[in-house]
Image 1: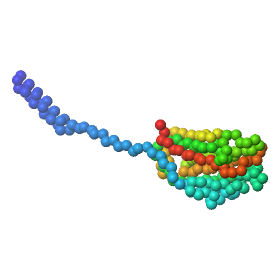
Image 2: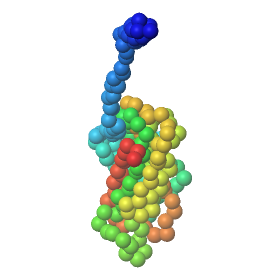
Image 3: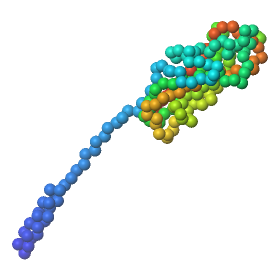
Image 4: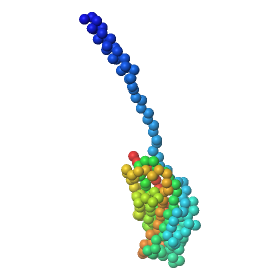
Length: 199
């Protein structure tokens, strides 16, 4: 009986040895790529309607010729012919994101006046803005601000991130009929484009 017990213990020890020699453990390796989005610091002329030329865009400014804004009598030019320019720059994003466009003046506004214009004058022209990745049908499209600080946001959602590619901004002057002449002077708007990593 004693030898069977010893044999039994010896057999268990013999069976346990190969199992211990084949023991395994795993180690996880984890790395992180930070989410980021970037926009260009300068933009290049990409295209325009036939009444706008590349020479009207310099640095980050589009200067619309006065003849496209108001006539020699100060009346707003009314036309269905579009006045628009598209500028482009290399941008990048490696994750889902939002695109926000903000208009500081809510359109093309007279610089020297604010609020309501003097009686019998107009101090605003409407603008339309697009901001999107080149050749994509999604983004901020046909945004027509109506008040200073107006903005529109497009949520990129679960779409595949674009990586590094061209980003387009399109600006268009809407030449609607007005009921009064425009105040003399400079009219401006500042467009801010923001790409943010989705929260």
